[in-house]
Image (cartoon, rainbow, N blue to C red):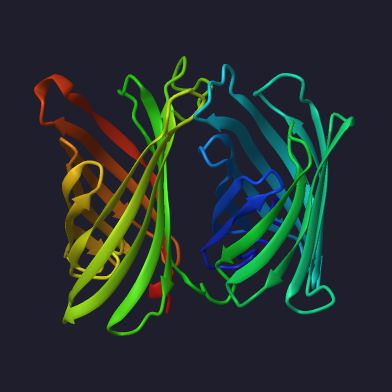
Length: 430
């Protein structure tokens, strides 16, 4: 569902927001739906960028993943009215199944959004560019009412009229349990899908406070000289529970999606696989500036659009770090060292090392080395990064990745990367 409320329309503060839904659908499949959004204010308006995907999978991890990558501009005309121009890229993939053709669309929409108190209404019109054939015109209407009947209940709906012939819809309600967790119910008829219902829990970063959310990160990189993959999208988010000065519990989800080359760098593109790392940390301060942690991680490697079985492994071990969040360049020297046992590949050692290079105000330059040894391979990821901005950091980077196999005949070439990332640490908010 397209968001109706801008994160900071007309304001001077950049913002990052995250919504994660997890539950079941009416076909008894697992439903997972994270939405990463970043807003950047400039004179006269707000630029926003958003990445989301709807994953529906059965017990064998077979099912569809809908990817949305959106970008656009908003202009606030007054307290109640704003205009929006956006491009929404949509594509659908199948996990652990053979798919001969990757179906994709590009929506171009202009919308007028009216907000009055608890009620928001958006009307839009546009069309389709590129992508699959047969799609031309698009008309949309969306509405949201917050505090419907009781303060904790919100309802929302969106209609999409495609080619003035087919009507897609998405409607549902959200019942707040606290400032960051909702129960949701949704019925939707997406592109080429039958009407389906979804029920589950929604975790969100609230407007005034992040709630349980600790940090969120998204990076998009290009590999112009790689023969198999031309892009990669990666990121993570972390939820913090029971925080205190001496200990905390952190649940995190990392994802990585390498994008295949296709016929050319600017040709049609789609993911080759979807990789998840789902982990939990119990962290405890052992000395000033030193933290130990027990960690557990489940790694899932799923091919998409190919009839190839998925791979998975479970890891548990201990870690030692000199600051709670490695991604925050607080110290000139940062480290995070972990060692433990992977129940599929045996002993495993991982290390993260960060070095500060230069700083002037909120602008920083630093380097990071991430390495993992296990499963007969040594994995290296070396990057030179910059960081600028306040509430939301923009991080351009150059990098080099390499896998070194312990058996020479399995050697994998390294690859050069350059890209742009966005990072937000809610725990460091003033």
